Image 1: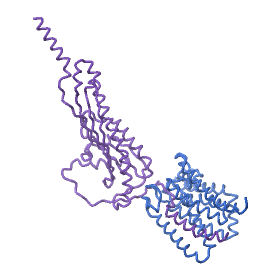
Image 2: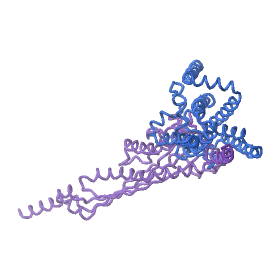
Image 3: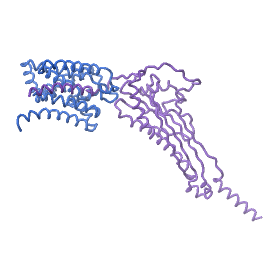
Image 4: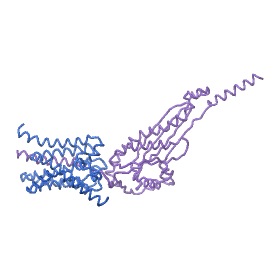
Length: 232
Length: 280
């Protein structure tokens, strides 16, 4: 296999892998999904895997289909820009940061499922990559797209749980976790900006590779300690 | 003299044996639990129409289900154990909905006959529910003897011949109320007819079974109807300005891009793809 064909296959693999993860999450029996979903109380009691797995289980087939399609396409796009390896790091780092952000920003949300936080992270990254590399005549459509995305985020903050066709695919009674979208967007922007400051980015990447597991455990332990001291 | 005495005794014996075959007029057995009688016991004039009050539905909903207290305490009233079994079936059919946080089965003893909304509010506070589904019912059982009942005079016939017939008509009606605003959210009916025959000796047991069977069959019809009405209500809520949906602590959140999000992603990919090709 030539180097060129490997380069062509990488985006495809990245997209298919993430779509497959979402598909697996949707065909699992309910009792497994309950173990994998973001569950605030369970996370605070130490079930750390939910910080990652909650993003790959969904509430309905339609919900999964929309998220998986968006996630797969954006992942393929990031890989096409030559960041296939970084994509793994973005996912491994982004998922728990979004989940921990939800623990803080949405204390009333007991359960969360869905990949839209990661989708927003990828969306912002792709926007930045296209913006960085595009010619000036593409900047107009990019600005329009960014404005449309911001408008969508604002619409998500409204009470759209009753289902408004294009806006949500969630079952009735489930509220859109707009906080996940906000966190994903902020994280995407932060990752891109950090990657521009090369030395800082390199230090962050090196440290992350060496201490990824330790960082996750420490953050959870610190959070649990804070919660126990604060309210329990 | 002996002939006359023997004849008289034979006549008495025949009359005694055929006593159960004398013409028997049909019986009716009615049991009702009327919603109007329970909720508006003292209402002699029609309820005045008031401007629609705002209904706040807090999701996930906490729902209570109960039978309306019986209007008559007559023979053949549905046993409480059967009521609880039927309510459990309704609970099972609706507990999978994500917007329903919990369903409480409320035993009949907690509802006071002719208790009105005051009683319903007490019960909803006691069971910590906001929405109550009340099952009202109306059942009529007709019992008659058919021509075979003539053979009851043989005594054995009373045990083997199915000379008694019953005909049971049941109507169940589930009405879902938002208790704080006293607003009827939606309703669904279920009806059934159970017919059968039994011998004189087993009639009481069989007809009692048919009454319970009638309720269960009406419930089989009611549950899908209630699901349909619930789906219609979910659609109606979107445009009904008098109903406001809120979330209570402990709600379920979904990370959802929606198809609008997918369209945005496709547009971004469209813009980006042209650029990637140029890079290649």
